[in-house]
Structures are given as structure tokens and as C-alpha cells.
Length: 304
Image (cartoon, rainbow, N blue to C red):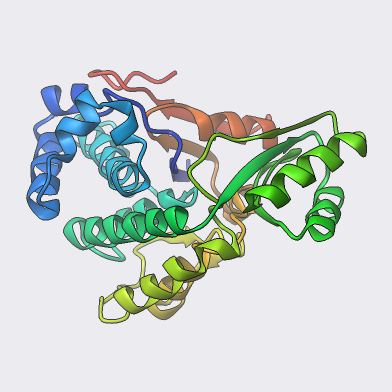
């Protein structure tokens, strides 16, 4: 068995996430306590108790998901449920890519948390400074969606699975693209309730500031194979890893490509770490034959 660990991105958060981990796993509790010290605010309390409006803020949910993913993994290791030498691969969707890199030893927990917190803060600033949104297009191929984006000056933000693509850009242009998509016969195209135009050029101020922030931070080569959303391919040199994280802020998330690359490289089973099972659903939509497990938000970490 060659295991690939996959980590959730923004949007997977929910109030109560991590509470059972904190209560039942000393290893998970230690990470939450360290996170509170590193951040200087009570991440655990917001994760466990909300309110939802606060947890949903980009500057909060990104570090919350980062800590939750690593706390889930720490609890499983503590219980002896992770095979020796595992994983052989790691990847994450958007924010989850940073969780994957931390798992691979590219940076330590405290450094990774500071990086994630700054990424979330800068992206929230960019959202507040622009009027952007996103829309989901279901059941269409990439070429048709890219034609629509070109015609309305918006961008493809996520290639999540076959027939599941997210577009992003200025609100008025995305709205016009949604209307035109329906007129062109796209059966399922809908606006999303998001704070801004993630993974589009509207995030450029965040990208530039994030690049400056990352410049003095030391990255290490990963201990096992990791993949970047920007290309869907493996990446291994510290300089390339850092460049990928910077570019990812404004570029398309090629999640389907990442998953296919991991499978082609030899991954035989995918384990999802996150509050829900979003990535497992995308995996099954991509390739029904893949073995996928999602570790639920319960004290016993039962698989679902």
C-alpha cells in the first residue's frame, strides 16, 4: 500500500471542528495549545464554539483548517493508526497544500502556522479591497468553460474534478458569465457565496505581499513526494516549493490533475484529513476505482 494524504481547503470549516480531537488526544491538544500561543489569539475557542461568521473569515478559517488537519493526523499517529513509513505522497487543495508541505517537513508547525495566518490575512485584505465573486459550473468540459471565461474576462479558479470547475473574477463579470452560460445551454452554473475572487488576478496584492513575507523563511526539501496546485505535478526543491505557494494565490487550482498525478506516481490509497469528506467526494467523482478514506470529526476518528 502506498498512501497519499490529502488535506482540505477553505470552505470545509465548520463550528465544532477539532473539539473531540482536543478532548480525546493529548497530541492534538498540544497542537491547539501551541497554535494559540503562536497566533496570540484563541484559535481553539473559535474553532470549537464559533460563531460561524467569525470562523468563516479567511484570516481565521485558513489557520483553523491547517491546525485541524495536522491535529487529526497527530491523533491518528498517537493511536498507532498510521502505517510505518506513511505517507509516501501528500497534497492539499489550496490552503491544504500548505498542510501537506508541513506534513512533509518543508517547514515546522509553528512556521507553517505563521505562514498560513499571513496568507489568510493578506487574502482577506484583498477580498475587502475588491468586489469579486466565484461561480461553479457543473457538467461541462474545460474547453467550454475556458471559452466562457475568455469571453467575459474572468478566470478558471479550480479544476476540482471532471465536470466540476469554479470560475472567479470581478462580480459583475462573473454574473454576466453565469447568465451567458445558461444561455449557452450550461445546465448547472451558479454563483457561490464567497467573500471574494480567490485564485484570480484580484488576489494580486496578496500574492505580492505574500512573496515578500516568504522571502526570508527557510524551506526544506520534502521528506516524500508532494504536488503543487499550480501545475498538478510533483515539486521538490525548496525554491520551487516557495514559488509554487506564491503563484498559487492567483493561479488555478488544478486539483484533479494533482490527484491523477499522485495516482500515476504510485499512490494506491488516499486518506483525507479535514472536517468533512469533500475531497473524498471529488476523488470518487474523478476515478471510482480509487480507494479513498475520510476521517470524520469524532473522538474515535472512525472512517466514513
